Length: 251
Image (tube, rainbow, N blue to C red; front, side, top):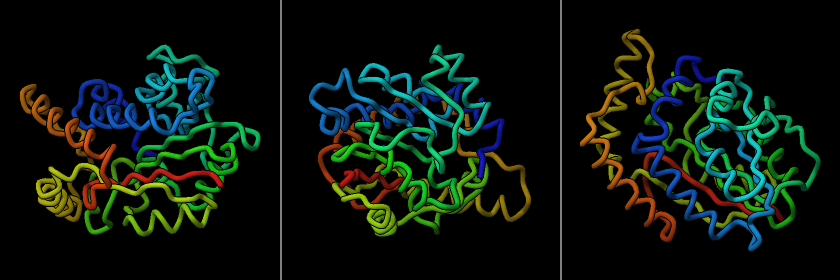
C-alpha cells in the first residue's frame, strides 16, 4: 500500500529537523560504525524505500548508496535534495533490480510494513546482500496501536519483536539483534494513538502524526530525549517502544 501523496511533502519538509527523524539518523550513524565493512568508503549500501531521501543523502558519505522507491513523488523530492538519478531509482522492494550478492549493507525504515508480502521482500533483500552482509530494518510495533497514522502512511500491519525475528529467519537471515526504540514516549504515544483511532472510526480526515506542528522548544526537547535514547539503543536492547528495529545477517 502506498503512502498518501500529500504525506511525501510533509516528510520532505520536516525530516531534516523533526525530532523523530533526527534521532533515527543518529542511531543509524552509530550502527553503521559496527555493521559496515572496515573499508566503508567502497561499501555498497541499499536503502529499501528511500522516501524523500534524507537517510539516503546521509548514507552517501559512507559508501556507494543507492535508494529505491516505488513512488514518483518520493523520487522527485530526492532530486530536489540533489541525489543523482542513478542513486535514487524507481523500483519495487518485492522485485529488486539488482544482481545477487551485490550489496554490503541494506537498510529499510518503516517501509516493508506497507508491503503485503513482507517475507518475500525480506527474501529479496537477502538475495542482493553479500554473504555476511547486514540488514538494518525498522518497523512499527504493536498491532494494538493501530491508528489513523498507520492508514495515512500506508501501513499494512504493525509488528511484535517475535514476529520480526520469525519472518527474518524465514527469509534466510541470522538474527543479530532485535530492539525497540521510542520507549520514553511510549505512554504518551499510546494515549495519542488510541484517541486518533477514535477519530478514524468517526470518519474524520485521515492524517499522519507528522502533520502535527510542534513548537520549536518542544521539538528541541524531544530531540534531546530521543537522541539520548538512540545512544542507549545502539548499545542495549531496549525491550519495549513504539518501533522495533532488527539487525540481521545474510548467511
